[in-house]
Image (cartoon, rainbow, N blue to C red; front, side):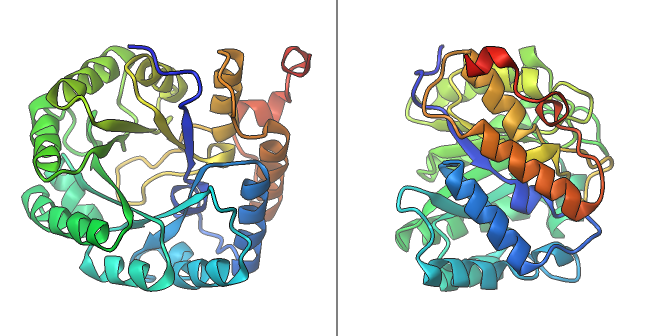
Length: 308
């Protein structure tokens, strides 16, 4: 199944998943500057942060203020969706109070990862996430639910496909049709990606699939291409290849936003974010964090063949 050429959505998660594993705390002002650059680059969907305990993830301590000031400033373009990750009911209440457009919430298919990440078993997390999602929808918000560690777990190893599908079916039965599969440990491979997304689409033809791949073993971008071939339309990526879950065994970067945009541009997709601005942003992030980032385009530059 081929994705329609104008339906690709890049969901930029650098400000959340990209920064949450960084030791250096980035200031509110710098995050606001980066958000303005993402607006200028025409990112249609941006994850601003997460509503988690500041002691566990100090990088996200200013998420409430960031949303509140952003909404008050009037700087957000009307066609941009601002998302946030929530793990529990308190996080949802915080997000509703400060103007989140879309709530991302999920359950790990690995019980071990679920306990480390949220303090809940997989079964308990499902029983709480679904009512939370319904409440957000009732408040007029967009909701994306996810299955984390969907392709394997750094602690448990192989995750049965049926475990993932059972969680997805509970989402679908609850009327939750925007579903992301997250490769938290970076174990996914293309055949597995195509098979799993194919089976999900067989469950409900109206499902909107998203993917979130980590590049732990170098397969992130090829897994995105496999997801593309499977009809996936939403791709969660981070500028500069930043990121990694603090509560998995090996935290590693997300698929790099500018690298994936370059690939899709070469494939003939239109309406994509601006590569030049994305590269300027990643360069500024590298300066702020005082380290080299691993994005391929950041190192090689935009090839002349794209500029022709």
